[in-house]
Amino acid sequence: MSTARRRKRIRNEPVRAWTAAWVGGAALGVANGIVREGTYGRRLPEPAANAISVASAIGLFVAYFGVLQHRWPLRSSVEAARVGAVWFALTMCFEVGVGRARGKTWADIGGEYDLRRGRLWPLVLISLTAGPEIVRRRSSV
View (cartoon, rainbow, N blue to C red):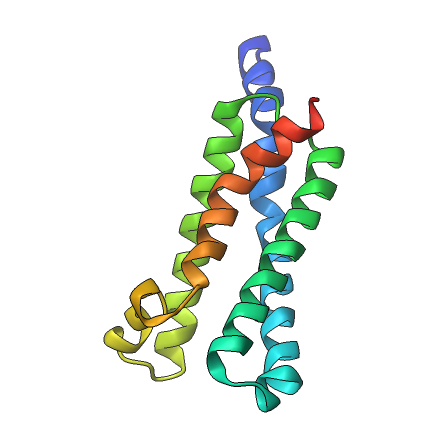
């Protein structure tokens, strides 16, 4: 392998590792949904269950990002932005794919992202996109 290719591979290593780690993030998201549906989601009104689910998902992702940053430190805002964009794209593909596989209409799927209707899930997407940079900055303090 040429020196230039080796440098590029090493330079992209944290981004690749974080991209592969998205699978673990997806597992956290699924686990969060299972807990919601199996516990408090049955007893609480939908807006309250939604808010708790969003808050717990954001907390889980922030903690996971901290672990990833410790293991594979993102060295720049550019790396963090790449990771955030990839996580956003993969998450949207996953959520739309699962929604369609479960028979949801496009309108139903889109409605899950409507803040005007009290749907808070877009806050999770924002945290997935901005989280790598926030954690990177906090770890370098």
